[in-house]
Picture 1 (tube, rainbow, N blue to C red):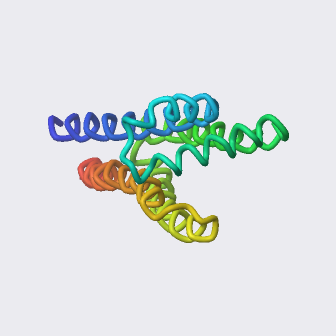
Picture 2 (spheres, one colour):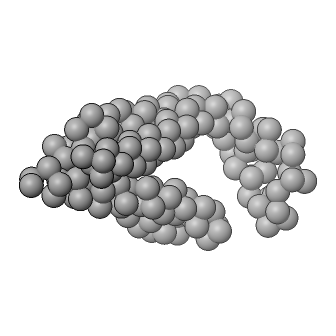
Length: 161
């Protein structure tokens, strides 16, 4: 019984951490122009190799928003998707064994982040170091969800005794 309680606590901590990351990623996707403006005002805090890229991205977003604001609706939907996906993880939070498939979905999605960052990033001329930053989100997700998945398998085994 004590082992089951520890597993449930571990699962809960891992899932809440993952969900928090998704929510924060989603919420920070809404004010992209403002965040980039702040970054541009503080370029001296960034490594030299990032300064031109951040400045270019800010001016592209600003110019686009000034002339075609409806294109940012796409990033609004990206932000919304992060929030919706976070809600999906409420299932395994409530009943991890029954909803293990959602954790599997999350792991697969995290691996897909790596592929998308490398393939689409290359096509869209995203600097390699920035693609590695994007990949880090998938790797962080995997580092949370894989131990969570293993804990759920262990919990399932304990419950079937």
